[in-house]
Length: 194
Image 1 (cartoon, rainbow, N blue to C red):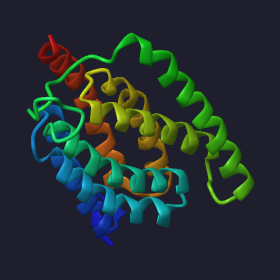
Image 2 (tube, rainbow, N blue to C red):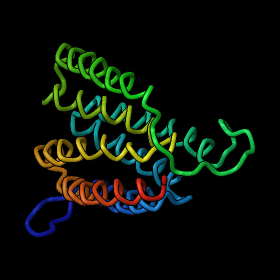
Image 3 (cartoon, one colour):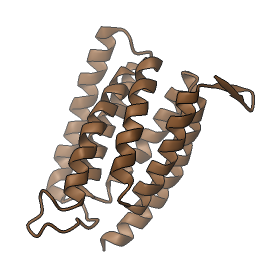
Image 4 (spheres, rainbow, N blue to C red):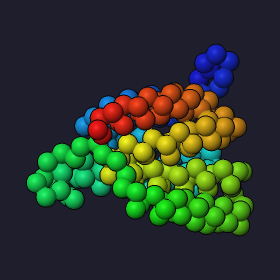
């Protein structure tokens, strides 16, 4: 533990937050380093979430780790591409919207129920809801749809609260920065999708 501005911060939390900062800048820019940084950040947050008792979000980090490999392949045009070229930023087809919303609702209900019955999560509804949105959001990022930023726009404030309550102050501050990048990302990715 180190002390920064009177707050006790674990070294792992601080390193995870620093990696996360590079991650979100790379996501905003739709850069090539986004997915490798996602792999690294996911590994750190698997540890941070599980040690903080946020089991749904920790499980999401495992999912994000796997999705990072899928995202690399999709973004570089190695799968889901006829001409094997890098995928441009696009827009979510309207036919997917009801399915994505239904997925968030069903996943939230399932995770909330599971976490409540396991009795380990301090905030099962917030943990479950943010995890459900993260699952859908990460899938949308892999498709390189600009609307993915709306998922994170909702998730980030929840994560600020959860990390602050668990004493992971560096991560809480990081998620405040993420919220700013969500607003910038919506504008930037929408403009680039046109």
